[in-house]
Length: 83
Image 1 (cartoon, helix red, strand yellow):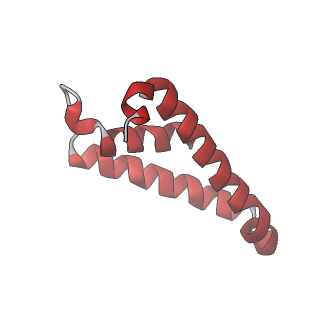
Image 2: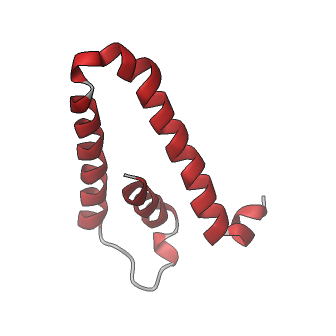
């Protein structure tokens, strides 16, 4: 899921700067893949919805946020350091 989200963010934010931009169809397919991954996680915890809503999902979102910051700062440190 982390790879899908990082690709989606890259192509959504920086894609227009790339010499070979991704088309809308493939960008939508990335989004659909992310939604399917989230659905699989929800299905895994379907019998424990309270645990999923109060602990698992916030941990997933925090991990995604931290990983995206690391990925973007490592690859685009100079760009992100300017306001």
